[in-house]
Image (spheres, one colour):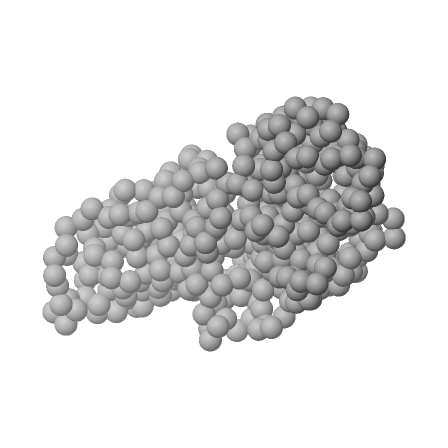
Length: 447
């Protein structure tokens, strides 16, 4: 069943991973005071850990890191926390475009429209309530099509960022009203009521009139939602903005779970103004279709040539994940208690600029090198504004590696809202010319 999402739920579900995996370490814990520890001789791999960097407490902070980016080709986008609409041209990552497919349900079965010959259609409006945006506000050209795919949409189906559904091909947006000024800070007035900000897309009233005729002439179509979604399979909503210059455009997030997001017929009957709603509720299937085009960008170069990621590497919602490998962990003593293990990943971002990295990142790993599945390690990396870096607590993961519970494969890093945002991140690699470089440090006690 479709859910309303709290932030914590988004953090746990938006990565697209099949399941979470909270790493635990089974090891012998002996309480040893740091002051009583003796520095011991360690056979730590050459060119990985500098022997002189070992502190009396067993601390190391000179690990070599391997960093690069991988592309994700099969990102699940059905039942998202946010519906995302719009397009923009990112000066670093390239072009991004997001479209919405959604079902509708009846606000009430068996509607009685009376004598349809006395009905005058006023408007047919699709309202979508804002919940945020990425990029910049401004005008975009909207198109809406009726889905006519034989299979329609289903909550039992899985939809990906690349999924499409066939439509009638007829643009339902009322001529002259295709260009909409997208701005979540705008004031929206419906009649005499001021409501939460939303876009209002005016559609062809002939479609609404045909629905009213169908309800009157074939009442079984409107007698149940099951029959209705067979008759009206839903809408495909997209923008068609043509060529956009770098830094132009944006993605806009909408809350389809909110009662204000709906399709409304406005009509007059015998001089009385009336309306009927088609709603988007928890029983409606919906998904985002998202195209990310990194062609001729440095992001594409790093994806195709991992060595290039040592200077700069990337993560982008719907498209790519950052990879960090720390091979030197394998050379640490196995009989240790890990007290602290921290990975700092500096990023390129100026506070207040339009392409935010988000406040958190998700961190996953593989249990073994031949395991294709990602497993969340049970914690997030948070952005430290003073360091301009994401800081990740890896203590449990490192302990599990040293205890032999899992292999030291790689850390897979993504925006926490991987399937529900436009977030993208530029990480400094170990060979960056920038001042701050990624760093992994660990404090442990050997027993």
